[in-house]
Image 1 (spheres, protein in one colour):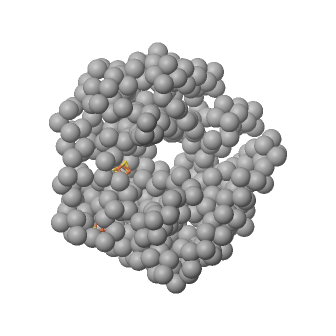
Image 2 (image 1 turned 90 degrees about the vertical axis):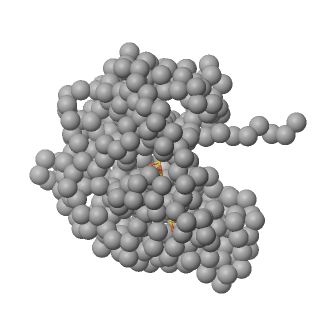
Length: 385
Ligand code: SF4
Ligand code: SF4
């Protein structure tokens, strides 16, 4: 019998929009800061979400639930725990392999941070910005950095780990010039890092241009490739894709980076604290393309179907692009943000072409056995730490 096909799906769950920090580029509005989704609403939401997947014949085998904020540490720990356990039990009964994790800013008491670390068995991630003052507690960027570092040290002691918490670095007009510094720092500190351009969501922030993104992707690839013992994304996920496409070698890492998929509607959903459903967090933050509400039994089939057809309606440039298989036309939200609609080509296309071309050149210049040896050493180091 052939092996059963794995059908992955990601659900982002935002239980609260409350946050204890004050970051200039946060794409999430701080609405109703004292509110969070209670257990009963969460149960109803999960049941509704699952019923819609069945209705749409999306036969998920592997589900990832990522609990995000606002700040997840502001949900009372006993409430969060009951919700997480409910979802684990629910999906076990559906024979779905569930993997869950949480994103947190680590701004909380040691007890709370260690509790969340233990609840998710270490599957937590954070966001960093080491060189600007954009992440703050109250008005103080220093306070933010000190608390975050102290809690990271607490986690590393608890886990007896040498690696820092995996992190996202968001590039806007101010922070982008520190991207190389951030990548070098992550490399020194044993931190897996994802760099990504800011999405224009709830706050007034200045995004980066395609040229700026292209330059920073290529320059950081050169700092990381064949040198680093930490994972850097999207570089690692794109490198693996190109190795698979060009050299027909199976990927060594299971990486995914959101901006390169055109079947988002069949692969992801995002739940808001009030029950609103979107295809992803980025669309939720921008308030674009709401597809329903779990608490009011609402479902907008037209909105969902429209977005689910992106793959069939890509821009003609994408259809003739040599990177189509691995880029998939880029990110629908970027295209919408650019005013090109759900089927459009994002202006970041220029940046994606630049990094794909750089990776292809590296694969031509360096014999694969050397690249493979670096990837294997990197993997051993990841497992050991
Ligand atoms: S690189 Fe550009 S043209 Fe090619 S698939 Fe991606 S978005 Fe489309
Ligand atoms: S629209 Fe973009 S950010 Fe949202 S799921 Fe699709 S690729 Fe990811």
